[in-house]
Image 1: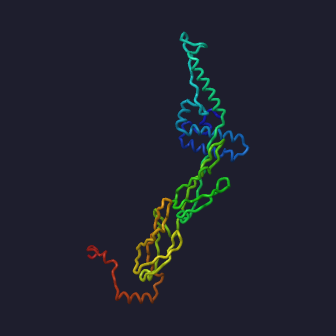
Image 2: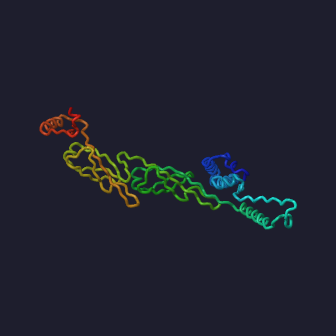
Image 3: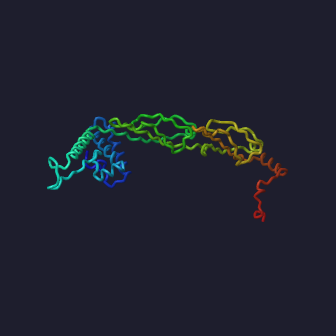
Length: 303
């Protein structure tokens, strides 16, 4: 291992924590034994980089290393003992206390044992992106995500997951080394917007176009929901902006909470007003005229 851990990671001594982490990830990704089978040099570099990050990536260890309290392997450095001044009290062999020297030798022996013991390193987490439809996110589903090595992972999409949330698959990241734990797979979920349905917490919102005669006469129409098409009764004399509730047709989550679907009516005129409709409305207006803006006519408007 190089004497300078900063040189191992290729960063300056004053590098920030993020710079050190970024350098570590970049190096281990390119040097990992799984990606360099049989390359002993890459394996040694991988171990050196992981060992360096084990110290420099932790604030307390990095501080001790910078102060010279620990060496490149993370072992405590043996304290330096000065010889007694000439004429001072000395024990046999010229040292004041052979017990202190015994402690020094014991520490040196432990340090050698620690350095000889093979180190284990945990594997890195792997990040993936997954797109799911609005309905898949609302109801939950199973999807496959393509891995960096060409394999695939089966991912259970939790019911009611929101856009931008991350799913963690324990132990599905990069393999560890020398018995170290495997990293995790982190899958960020992007929910594709639906053309007609939108989400408000656990509720589903829908603007439903209805015809002039459905609004006037009432009737039953088919309404899209995350569970499929369902029937909705339109009351006679319905108006644009009127909202109706489909109980329990929203998003359900594991805690047992369940939302509703809110349906807002939008009365649509026909694309073409033909002569028959125009004649009918003219005659109907003469005997059934009404003013929907009457409540808006305040004193200021009337002047």
